[in-house]
Structure formats: C-alpha cells, structure tokens
Image (tube, rainbow, N blue to C red; front, side, top):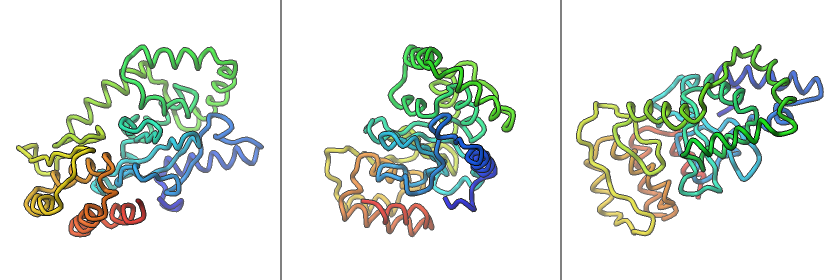
Length: 266
C-alpha cells in the first residue's frame, strides 16, 4: 500500500504521528505503533492482506484484508494480525474495520500487546493480559497520552475485549464466508453459500500438480481461492510447480496485486 493511497483513517493517523514527531514524540514511543508498508510483509502474510502497521517485535504486523480484491473500500476492510513466530496460529482478525482497530488500541493501551491475541482463545488469557497492562508502571502515562488520540479520532473503549475478538468478530466473519480455510480467514461467498468443493491440503502430504490443475480448471472461484489460502498457510507454495500453478491461476482470475506478492515471495 503506497502512502499516497492510504485510506483516510490511516492518513489521518499518519498526520497525527507526524505532529507528535514535531513535538519530540511518536506513536511508536507512546504505544509501540509504527505505520509501515509492504516491506513488513512475510512469506506467510496472506496474499490479500495489505500490511500497514508493525510492532517491530518478532515480525508481528497488522494488515487490511481485501478478500482478494473484492473489498475496495479499505476503511471497511477487516484488520488482521500476523504473528510469524506463532506459526500455525499466526493469522487472526482483530477488528472489523480501522475504526474498531483504533478503539481496540485505545482500550488495550499497548499496541504491541494485541499481537498476543493470536495465542489466545480463553477469556482468562485476555483478562490476565489486560490486568498486567493496567498494573504496569507506565499504564497511567499511556492512558493520558491516548486521551488526545481519543479526542482526535472519536475513540470508544471496548467493553469486553475477549467477547469482541473471540465471539463477535468470529460470528461476523462466519456469516460472510462460503468456505473455511486453515488460516481461519475463510473465503467470502460470492455466489451464495451452496455446496462448494474444498480441495484437501495438508502440510505433510504432497500435492499432485496434475490433479490440482484439473481441480482448479473446474472449481468455482471460492474453491480456488480457498486452495490458495490453504496452500500458502501450509507452505506448499514453496514448491516451484505449485507456485507456478497458483501464479497462473491468479493471472487467470485477474488478481495482479496478489500475483505480484506471491511472485516476490519464496
């Protein structure tokens, strides 16, 4: 994502950060938040996720989920956390849109702590993290600084972070998807939620390229995209033959952005 194509909320946040820098501070200093671009992408960053923020710790970064380019308004794109060190559970939706993401930051008070959500499922985990942050000696200072951000962006505290991430977000996403995928993101239904075929992908099972080619030639678009998600999630795209097959399929589906990201990786 080029800086001149930032959605308005991110551009406003970038301007806010510049003003802090003129005052001798920054969002990074405040809460560990750095606005970034594609340079923070990892091979395991989903092809349809546009990175926009990084913690600069363990490769943890956040991006906007475009659902393979079908979502053009990035203000409404779900925000995904990618935590490379937590491989196998390294992708998680943490907000439905940018506004909610800023609400989440305001609530948690420490941006880098949100990457821990990829490790969490239980309410106790969330409660322990939030309690630790509130008992930290820098908590009051963070809260005070974030008040100016609250006023600037009209932020609201999220009443129950656990329920928000683990219940509300998951239920909202489930209503959208037509096929599940191994990364938990799923593929959005484009032509209703009929009986869509799902090609089985397993990390330790070699895929027959000829069989895969036949499947892609006959499968609906949702099934093809689900395979691409699963193949990337399990690192099967490291295999040159499979990678070339997927590159050709992305070209056929007119997805130049995702194709370039895959071509530049591995």
